[in-house]
Amino acid sequence: MVVGYSAIVGDRLVAVVTSIGCTGLVVTAVALLGRWTAFLPWGFVGVGAGYALFLSLRPGAVDAGAPLLAAAFFIGAEFCFWSIERRSWRSERQVIVHRLALLFSAGLAAAIVGGLLLLVTSGRDIGIGYEAAGTAAAVLTLAVIALLVRRSRGLVHPPRRGG
Amino acid sequence: MTRTASPKLGAYAGLAALGLLAALVLGLPELVLLAAPFALVAALGTLQVRAPRIDVEVELDRERALEGELVDVWIRFGAGNGVEQIDVLLGLPPGLEVEEGTNPSTLRLDAGEERVLPLQLRCVRWGAFDVGKVHLRSHDSFGLFRHETVIDRRRPLKVYPAEESVRTLLRPSETQVFSGNHVARQKAEGIEFADIRQFVVGDRIKHVNWRATARRGELWVNEHHAERNADVVIFLDAFAEARRGGRSTLDPALRAAASLAARYLRQRDRVGFVSFGGTLNWLLPSTGARQLYRIVDAMLDTQIILSYAWRNLVVIPRRTLPPQALVVALTPLLDDRAANALLDLRARGFDLVVIEVSPLDLVGTMRGAKREIAYRLWRLRRDAVRGRFERAGVPVAVWNDDSSFAVAMEEVDAFRRHARTAPV
Image 1 (cartoon, one colour):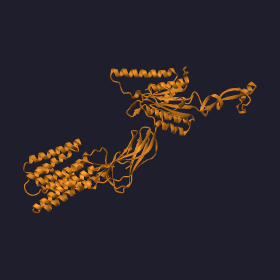
Image 2 (cartoon, rainbow over the protein chains, first blue to last red):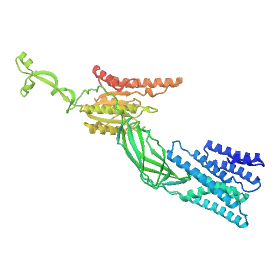
Image 3 (cartoon, rainbow over the protein chains, first blue to last red):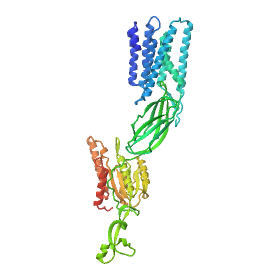
Image 4 (spheres, helix red, strand yellow):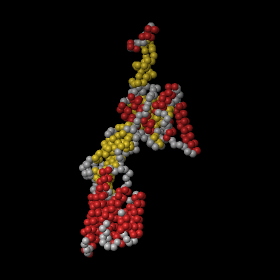
């Protein structure tokens, strides 16, 4: 969806944008077929890179379709990881229904929150203060994620018999 | 409980970082929106991660079953703190298969919810099993972390071998002193008529043969054969087995041994069991239902243990076999040690019968001249071993796929009725 949107809406260097996006799709497809989990994010990076190039070539205001694309991108990524899970048996219907509901809720929330953010920020003049605050928020977010991931990976409890 | 982060967590964190950095560097706020869901899921998933509290019990509907029967198993999940997704695998030994139900399976458990996961197992092969090792792997909502544990709630399950049809039992040539169903050679109190003789002081009036007395003018009495029991020892050759797929020579031998033990015990004989292989296990003869369980339990422990330690072992210790016992040997005749041990028993005067559980049906087709020659030599060698038994007056019946165990028993019985015992 992201690649298609960039190709249809874009008007400059469409071929380059599309080819970068398609490369990402091919990498994703290969990773899915080969069940290479480590390879999969690189496909998403390719798709994202195509979209980033489309955005940087695009003149004018913020892309209004970004919240929807973000939601679609996230749902697509979730489906890819779901399909790559090594499981040869069928899950209970309740598990699948709950997971699908959670997935679409998360996608919907991402679209709504993204839309609201765009609505709030698009009407304002961006000053140096806002830019600094945004940069700080982004860096803080990255730091928090890195810290949490590091902590959670380090937390390995020894096996305990009998549950 | 072991916690591991899935590769997805690293991927999401990386995508979020890359998206936010690109948004900063390129000044594109849209990329923040693209990266934000990944960042949020990674952050929330990491903050919310907790080890699930799961209480599992395993129940079996019974502890004993026959080969081929179905056994119900229930995996009970007690009220815990809820799990979004949990993979449940009940560890099963090779002799048990899932007939109904899903193993492994994936469930969702709400907080405080109690669940029962029913499974129906088919007992494919005899043996003593422990069922109830449950492997659990839980996942969080977005599959970023998994917790793994093994809960040991093992319960014993004994699968007894199915019965082979036995029409006639072999009559032992010697009987013991206790009463039973065999007509003994010795004359004593009994029902079967044996002979008549002159009355002597002490004879009971009820034994007087009045017709003979009237004819000869003096008292004559009837003599009877005593009804005695016999000692039967079932000998199982566990030195080697031929196996192909799910079939082996040991399985039918064990079924036949169990059937013979049950039938002989039913007619009040004393039955013993000797399993001779990598190790020597024996059970001294006794009677009754308890002995049957003892024998079958001993059989369940029988396994083929390759051993070269006793390369020259041909003698079974004297105490393991009662004198004048009928020894019914079930052997694939694959190992010379078993054949030599049996011939030694014959030399010691035991009444020996050999049922050969033929491994020929389990041998694949021989392709190539060398293999064919090797196969023919092997068969000739087997014939030679069989010949050694026959020269020693031991009947050998071949039990293969074309005939039933009852036919093999009939064959042995016919040999014993018509052949004279060879001098040993």
